[in-house]
Amino acid sequence: MIEQVVDFLNEALEQDSEAINKVFLNINVPATEAMIEHPTIQVRMDKTLRLIGLINGLVSDGQTCIAMVFDDEGKRISKFIIRSVY
Image 1 (cartoon, rainbow, N blue to C red):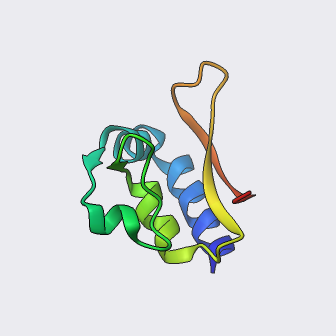
Image 2 (image 1 turned 120 degrees about the vertical axis):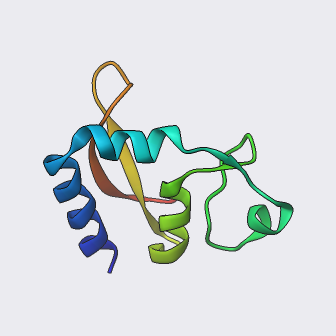
Image 3 (image 1 turned 60 degrees about the vertical axis):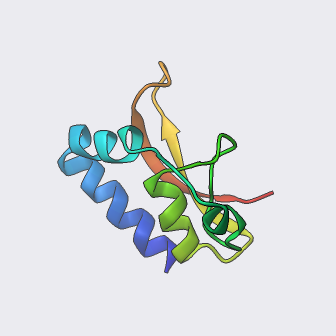
């Protein structure tokens, strides 16, 4: 399943990189303690949640997750990949 989600996200990024970058990078909300303690949802160190953390909560197998690769300037998503959690 994770491979299909990465393919889907990369296809969406190709079709409208501006929209995908805005959705994945601009939406950042405080997470509740319950969300922070969730076994698969990934909450950031500053206790906020982004869409990628929620998606990973759905598709991660505990050993791999979806990661965003950024451009050379580190400001825009250039692609989505599967990476090891460790």
